[in-house]
Image (tube, rainbow, N blue to C red; front, side, top):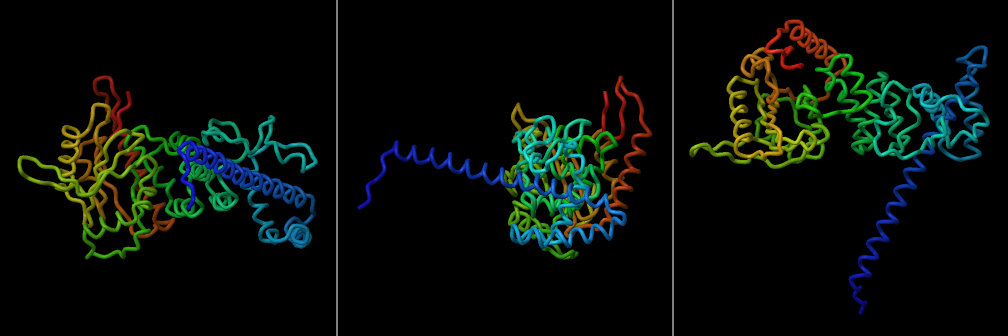
Length: 395
């Protein structure tokens, strides 16, 4: 019969396990970080060598075909011509990540300029990309697989945004690729001006007010539901609950699930909002309703009632005003503005898509939304010392 461990032995065991697990995590992170740096340096060597050739394209092809088998013989798998092309593309995509460092290349591995270790573990990912200075190194929490996905993003601002958010939210490679393919950055960008675009790229998703976290459209392709007029709201709701992790990823950082169909009673009448969340950054409840048909003014009025109820009956003194979010199959933006008013900052209506939009579809949608935003901002008026731009108030 095995001896039962005494309490202090159990506590000691747990502390030792914690130390070892942390060490394992740090080893994996360090190895990943060093490999990313090494591939960047290899890519730089290839690019610089190619630039010495008289006929660059043909010279580069011969160079890689010669280098690949020699590296494979020396190190084994991982150095095919295709892999070497990836290293070259990686350097070209991130050529500003480190200033020129003196040779030999092997002595450069630990440094990223100004004496900073490239693998330095910084707690805030945005410190790598903040301000106008060139980034210095790579985020230690991201692997080569992450950077393989990132370097395919052509827009430099979008690439920086995805890099920050992947590290901040611990996205794995699959989650990162899903956010890229669903145009997460572009959907957040719709209500931003040029300054907002730069801020989004340098700081990631900053939740200062409700409009910062609302996207339009929301892409729910992970539900595997067909586009069908026979889709009912209960079916959509059940599908979202069954894939809650993916839905929270789509909603964005800070959303915490509270419950579904939570009853609220007004003088004997019962109402059931579909989904309730709490946003930990905005510190407010987010009441969410699902509409599989075109949004009506009655749907907006119902959401206004839900928001008022939560503001008066549920939210605590330290909570900010409740946010209402209606996910609908279709909407009329003019109706939304007339029902909610120009200064509404609490209730939002966004469409959902059950399949990934094409780049062309999203481009047309962005242009349409940008025109609407410009029209609103061009017709401003001064009221009581405030300049009112459409839905936004600037003091």
